[in-house]
Image (cartoon, rainbow, N blue to C red; front, side):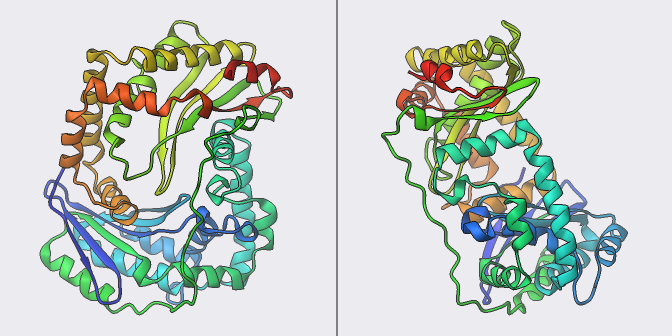
Length: 428
């Protein structure tokens, strides 16, 4: 890990963040934009993700996908892109001496993509098949059902990929208009992490400082979420009927946002509750009772809100039993709190995982980019570790009581069920 980083804003609005790493010969360059599905409206839901695909379909200098990928492959590069609900990122990882070549390719994709009408129509089929693959996978799609339940009526509850119907109807004009709004120098955070020298960074700065971008009359924005405090039990439960061999559930609560000071304590809680093979949920649900193969807990923060949830794939004949066991473990944590040993083990695990996860330059780039683009303050790994080490048993017990509120419980079940009355009884 390396706590030294620099962040500077160039005259054209680009924020350039560099993270030198001396124990590697690789360098990763990542372009990060604060745009995702929550910035969309219903008629273009999925457009953020669709544009991510189109960035790889050819530019004015490299007119086809083959031209782009052949050149990337000739660099021996690792490259990809990903779209979330509040961000989209593109990255290329190469050996240090090929940094400027990687930057040239990345810039060409971002600012000179053709968005050819024929390619747009062809790629619609690819994206629709990706949507179908995702929605056919219960483990993946149930997380979307949960966010739809906990953020009703808000774009944060929509599926990132959109729907086949919307994707089929998107026009090239809508693609270009949306691109012009969000893909501007003043919206981009460019992160360079790994074996980057001072001279190489100066070259990167010189190259990107000349970008003018496209002026847009639109201002990127999204509707903030307001979670209602009083919601009936029926409104807090969703049943999705599907003939499956295994039942799937997500049981959760409103959580915290990116900048919440309780983040380290919640990370420890999540780890000891459902983040390890030695966690409470794993032992109680899988090891002792054999109710599930997969069971885990997760925290999912955003700028304004967040959630904390338990996800499981279960024996469909014993779903009620599993829900009861999960709720009993939650009750135990809020009533008695965690043990000293549990907290210590969770902190040791988080410390070790953080150190290992940031050995790679692409992971390091993502760590800093996400914070600098989405959070109020950029935190070094060392600063995060120090906060985790300070977490006490009382801190974890307190955040458990604040998160696990019975009247805020949400439950989504996907499986061969049509009547939710039997499950509502367990939520009372």
